[in-house]
Length: 80
Image (cartoon, rainbow, N blue to C red; front, side, top):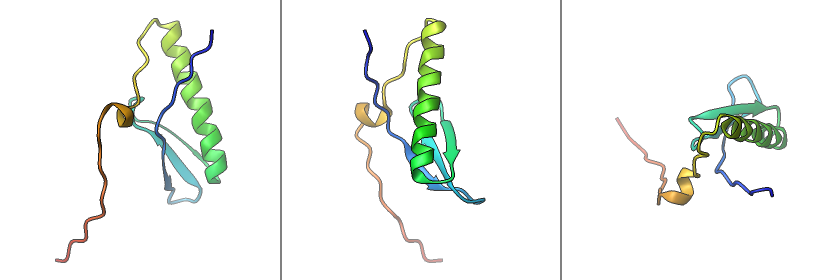
């Protein structure tokens, strides 16, 4: 029986173009793509591979840190 895993993915523009996709809950796992859509698909692939490897090694699969913690974000403007 399949289990559904959900993880927060953070996208940011890459300096060389495209986007980097970070998955904080999985030990800082990251991947990239030329577009957001490609970065999203790459993130799905890398998450799936990571979880499959954990299963093969009989290791626990981490929970999404954003579901287990109440985190807030804000932009701070600092004038110096």
